[in-house]
Length: 236
Image 1 (cartoon, rainbow, N blue to C red):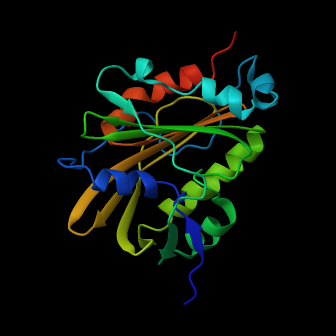
Image 2 (image 1 turned 30 degrees about the vertical axis):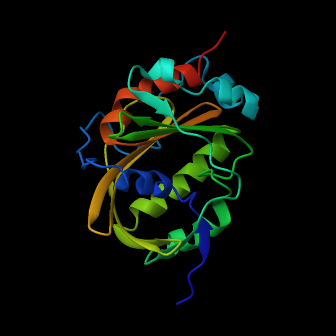
């Protein structure tokens, strides 16, 4: 079988490799919240159309809205940005939807191929990581692109990737997502490699023309998701 390759930007792989390397990082379950990976819009308010059709923010504006160590609290250290083009190739095995989607949609170190984006990653006291990605664009494009990737990943309950020469077994589980924003998606990914295992939670929230993705240690994602969304969508 021919397997197409993508960069390590395939959602969750970069975070998982980092977490697998952390000593003492054990899987933890994420508590259920309100609704599942729910792409059904909430009832629109009087600002709904304005939000959805807002002019996309530039990448520089998005960077200003990322969480920083002051927002996160004690014990967090921001990770240096990876050099452009420095990601290992990732070959997807056993999930045709991701084989196709990875090569077409993932670029550089970002998870989605949207031009306006920003990203920050943090370690927490050597025992966990959390990564925030922000994108801005037309609401319909953000919705379609995110939905395709999450559907592809949860549509393959078990598959494998080769990150460079490292094989990683992955299982996926769609889980309830908090009732935030206009659309939301969430899943758990269990990564196993070389006898080590870890769980990465990934939750995406679209609010108008802004898409927020927070991934990493489940407890850290739960702790900082709402704060990240408030900062990303603040007005004035």
